[in-house]
Length: 86
Image 1 (tube, rainbow, N blue to C red):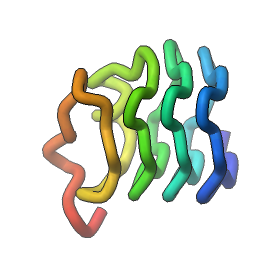
Image 2: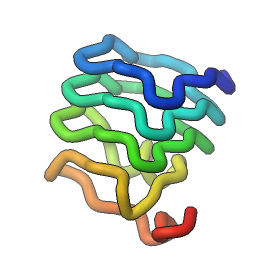
Image 3: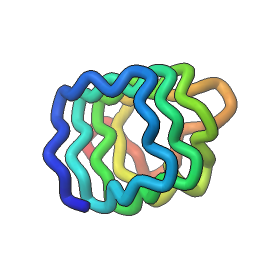
C-alpha cells in the first residue's frame, strides 16, 4: 500500500492480489503484468502503460486515477473521471 513505483518497469510482473492502494505508478510500464485481483483503489496510473495487462477489469480502473496519457488494453475503457489533468 502506498508504494512509490513511479516509472517502474513492471513488464510481465505477477501482481495477483497485490494491495496497490494509493500506490504511485505514474509512468510505470505494466505491459503484460498479471493484475487479477489487484486492489487499485486510488492508485495513480497517470501515463502508465497497461497495454496487454492481464485480467485488468473495468472496476479496478474505475477505482484508480489516470490520465489521457494512460495506455489501456482494448478490453477496458477509459473511466469518465480520468481527464487530461487528473
